[in-house]
Amino acid sequence: MDTSLQTAPPPTDAPYFAAHDPVALCANRALVRMREQGLQPVPHNFEMWYAYYAQSNLDVVRAIDSMGADPQALTDQRCGAIHQEFLSNAHEGEVARQATATIQATMDGFSSRLAQAKTATGRYRGALEEAAHTLSHTDSVLAMRTTLQSVLDSTGDMIAHNHQLAAELERSAQAMQQLQGEFEQVRKQSLTDGLTALPNRKAFDAELQRLWQEADAQGAAFCMLMVDIDHFKAFNDTFGHQVGDEVLRIVARTLQESLASGEMAARYGGEEFAVLLPGRDLQAGLAQANALRTQVHNMLMTRRATGEKIGRVPVSGGVAQCCIPESAQALVARADGALYAAKKNGRNRIASAST
Image (tube, rainbow, N blue to C red; front, side):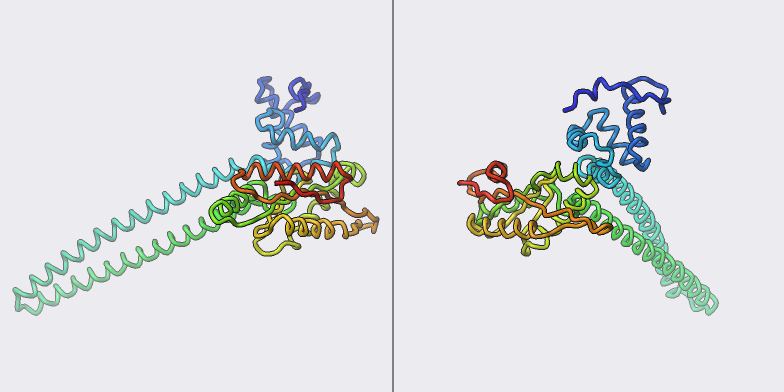
């Protein structure tokens, strides 16, 4: 962690907030940094920088510090990706809170309309019973006409109440359908990496746990592959972080398009990706990993605007097969160890983990 954050001087220009308490100081630093970086003054950017200067979220601190001092590194898009990965849970909670309030208001409105319909039904039943009694005890044509008119009026009121109840039901159904769509959108966003559009670490962890449970219960084989772009920092220093972001997106798309149905590629963090290969033993997993590495390395990247050749993207990888009763975390550690071995032995290669 960069301890200089704790002793850094306050902004030299006029502060946005006059107070000198830690909250105001962090807010000032966040706002000044956003202006210096040329970032849009939107809430998620401010929240990210405030968390950085307050050191309230160490994942945010590490993600920003890992980019160094290059002012081009922290674009609005990258800040959005950091915010989504490490700070979006609070917004999911806010969506849930708003949804709960909407559901409660919808139920209250429907309950009120239902109570009105119940009262109207009681009045209608009473009107019918009274009409039946009157008609059975009179021979007067005028009394019969009056009674029948009263029944018609009561029937009209009842029909109107039923229409209102049906309309309320329709509104409630539409509100619930909209909420369902909003929840689904939030769920997908919470499981998707903002930069590469791949499943994120949270989605990967859930799928890994599912496969592990399946292997534990049924003995089903599966492999895990960790992939890392070689010398990515030097690549960023040479071509800039915007090009680096595009490389990450291209590698992500190549991995995703090269996998079969049921297999998953996820962004694990930084320039590292994780791939799950259900139904494959170590030999098959190693063959698939080498095919993926070759597919990525065969791409010759150029700048679209200028035609400048950027070159090829070498990647290293580590493959491990799940071996019950080891934990899912142990599998990740073995795959990561194999990746380290591939890096140590020259990079641009795949290594496999021993069981």
